[in-house]
Image (cartoon, rainbow, N blue to C red; front, side):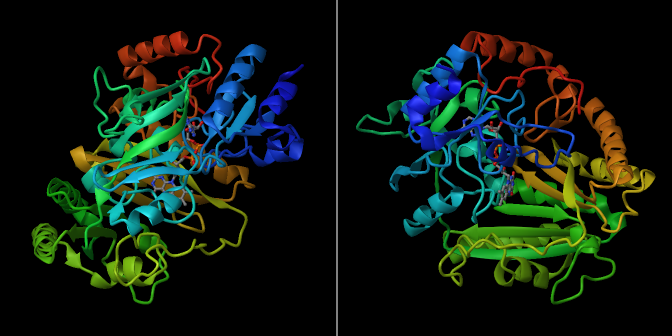
Length: 484
Ligand SMILES: Cc1cc2nc3c(=O)[nH]c(=O)nc-3n(C[C@H](O)[C@H](O)[C@H](O)COP(=O)(O)OP(=O)(O)OC[C@H]3O[C@@H](n4cnc5c(N)ncnc54)[C@H](O)[C@@H]3O)c2cc1C
């Protein structure tokens, strides 16, 4: 029997295929460009942890790599780096339990935040998530990791993970963190059980240490009172904006979003003021009105002290009238989550390529932004038909994650070349300062993300060797590659 025969025996003939058209359709390489092929040799859909376990055992026997797939296929190494089996977990989408008293939710890996959030809202709970519409699933977002609305107060998604059920590279099914206690009377109640934090071993692991089949999340009580605010600043006041972001983060504002995109890309029902170069939107909430009002006042004081100008229409438009993705709690929205929203098509062949998704201290925003713009000018990205835009997501602990989106027609080599030159120059500058990337691994991003932390890197490689001697799960994860 070959590997296809073995897989068919595990999941039946309908959930495994090596048909080229289907494998091709899983060849996702979001944001990376056409030259980066990540085509699986076969695609398998699993329905249970036991099936996942048997698939991994078969893969070991036949020496075939296995890469689990999240919702979109853009995180981590972004796909089947060494070919082999693409394990699609989208059929494993059950919500296992929601415990209102302990604020815990357990779901299968492929469950979407959309589905889980709907059930949480009904019970007066919520999770800060990347999106409340179709898309990110609960496990891949912890592996990648994602940061969504609420990241300023609560941090990236992985900060709320309480436990995992994992299929190890050997095929053994184990439970870590709160999930280790899932079958006891207390149930899953706390991530930090006896011994070191093994949940952290799997978060940000790219799936190389194990395949998550269930995940336990720490939920939040859904605040009843919400308000949405926006301010703008002219170009030369970037240091004031940076200070605003830092100060507003320190007082636990629920969510802050910084960008220059409305300068370049705005089709709203009102005009953005001519000197409005940077925009910051802020979401505050409270379990009672007094608490929310207090937070509103604090945010207003910070923005005004740093010379921001109030632009209430922007927040109102983005969060309350435009069909945006964040409506989680607003009482006017019933049902709380709108159907999926499709943005305008861009007309000309092309796509918004992400220059990089960065993580750096919020206090460095002025320098990072200035360098980005300088290189964008130097390599003439600013002269493309659609101007690139910057998005920044301040998070607690004074860390900011940012993305620079560049619209390029990838059928035009000179545009792609300009994009790559800008990215390479920026990466060199960024790496020297200790920069890291939100979710990508070398060789998709430069080796400095490993070599800047060489002791930790060697430890990770030793763990990988011990857990996965055949290098079956997501191979390539702990390798140096020179950047692509
Ligand atoms: C509509 C939409 C909105 C989004 N908004 C945001 C946002 O606001 N902020 C943000 O940060 N991100 C956002 N994202 C991206 C989001 O972070 C990712 O979709 C999510 O984190 C999962 O990654 P992926 O879908 O790219 O999956 P993949 O790239 O397939 O998975 C990520 C990595 O984890 C591995 N993996 C997947 N599943 C498992 C598993 N069960 N066990 C072990 N390893 C696994 C994969 O092999 C891969 O290496 C959004 C995505 C969508 C579709």
